[in-house]
Every structure is written in C-alpha cells, then in structure tokens.
Length: 380
Ligand SMILES: *Cc1c(COP(=O)(O)O)cnc(C)c1O
Image (cartoon, rainbow, N blue to C red; front, side, top):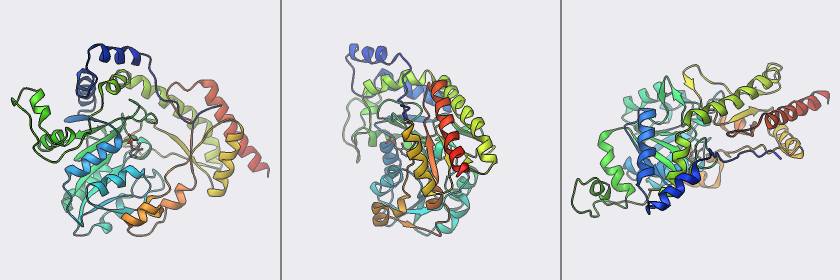
C-alpha cells in the first residue's frame, strides 16, 4: 500500500512536546510559538507572523482584517479549497470567481480586471501546488484599483516568486500546517501581516478581542476587551510539533523536491508523447514540491487511472470540484466571465503520492504503475 500522504515527522517532536508539558505551559503564545514565529519571520523576511489554529483561521483573520462592508466583493479562483471562499463570506464579502490558467492552475491574472466592479475590495491569490501566481501583475492591478491582496499560501511555504517568499508579497498571507501540507503541526497555520499598521488589530482579533498580547509584552498593566475578536491561537503542544519541522525547513524541502524531480524525469517521455501533461513551473517561481500532479485526457481516463492505481495499492487523488459549481458556491458567489479552463482542467488532474521521506522503492512502484497504465492504454 502506498498512501497518498504521510504526515511529516522529523523525529524530535516528542522531545519538544514533552518540554512544553514539563514547562507547565501548554496554552498558546509560549516559548515554542515565539520560536516558530521568529524563525519564519527571519527565514521568509516576513514583517510579522502569527501562528493560528489552521490555514482556514489564518484566512478568516485576513478577511476580517480587510473590514469588508455589506455588498463588497472579493475576486478569487474557483479552483481552490472551500476555505478560501468561506473566509471571504465570514468576512462579509461576496466571492466572485474567475477562471484559472491551464499551465499553473492559478487564477488567470489577465481575467481579473474585467471582474472588478465598484464593490470589489480584494483579490485572493491562491498559489496552487506552491507555484506562485503572477504576482507582479496582480499587485499592479490591486494598486491601480485600490484593492487588498490576500495570498492563500497554504500550499506555498518555502516557495517564492522572483526571490520573495510566498505569503510576504500581498497585504496579508496565509500558511497552513495541516498534516497534508509540507510542514505540519497537526492542525495549524500562520497569518503573515505584511504592514505594521495591521498588526495591532490582528493581535487583538486573534486574542478574543483583548489586548492581552500587549499585556504579555509588558506594554500595558492590565488587559481588557477592546474590539471584536475570536480565538485563533494554537496550543503550545501543536507549536512544539511545528518547531521540530521548522528546524528542518531545508531538509524537508530538498527531500520533496527530489521526489518531484524523480517523477518529472520518469514521466517526461509520456509528456513528450502527448499522453499526459506535467506541471509547468514559470521561470520566476521557485516551487516547494507541495504536490506532483499529472493531467490526463479527460474525466473518463482519470477515473480509469485512479481505479488502475488503486488496484495496485496506490492511492491517487483529485480535488476541488470547482467552487462555483458546488452547492455553497452557487448560493454565496458568482462566476465572472467564461469557465474555459476551471472545470475542464480540474477534471483531468490527478495527484500522485508525495510526502517527506518517500522511499525510493515506493517512488519506483508508483512510476512503474503509471507507466503500466499508459502501456495498456496505448496497446488498446
Ligand atoms: C489546506 C488549504 C487551506 C486550509 O488549510 P487548513 O490548515 O486545513 O485549514 C486553505 N487553502 C488552501 C489552498 C489549502 O490547500
């Protein structure tokens, strides 16, 4: 059996978790949370990083910080996880979906401007598979029209665009540390606050509407309820787990990139024969091997492929029924323009097993099975 995902474990998690317990400090914003945030701020040249309970809650925070008013609209791709849209709805905005580019599966930056109305307040750039959206173009559009940019970099930790870490380019960035992501803490995430002016409000929002963060730093002598808030801070037990992973940023990244490279090389001949399409990485993007996907001919062939792999004990998955066609998407949002690629490309895409410390043997098994599938298809 080869799983689609295996949660990353580096080996020192138990020591750190034990340490947190022995310190008698398991609630949020203790030593491990501070270390994790400092490490990310330093490594990604991020102004401020706040650990959150999930990637979803980081997106929720970002949306709330945008202060949407009734009727405001946010432009985002339809090919994304439900959380990207849910957060905008929670923040009070209407999701307006636009089409994706077939080469990266990211929002098509050339279709954003046409979707802008007087109600548009923000653009969400979701970096699919850790491959950056065309950020220069998106930032220029946002600046021209006075819009906020939220980066959904849930899949983009350790990836960059023109040398800048994903999550640090827009106004607010969101990471996920779910067990299916490159770095994990079980459930967790981070909000990257890229403007100093948003930081005070972000801290209050994260701490139940109180100014407790200021109090902990000794900046005030009592804390109180100062604004609307919620609870978005994770426990030190989760942060301790993440700390182990963040010390291994480069090792985990290199390991995943190696698997990605093995797959890319093995499948290049199939791509050359036109049997599949493999991931396109634009020159300005350094990706993080968050996933390896291939695109097949159509939905029917993909269904056959997944069944074929499953019979060989290999789990392959697809995801993201385009949000605009899902029940909640129809209820809460609308699609602007024509769906040229979103549905068509999403039906062809399938993800292969990809995780930290995947063995050479398992990679070879997956590669051989994919090759066998196309050998039998060709023979037919
Ligand atoms: C995983 C993911 C999320 C949500 O992250 P959680 O930590 O699971 O809440 C949001 N957006 C995208 C694009 C994701 O891949």
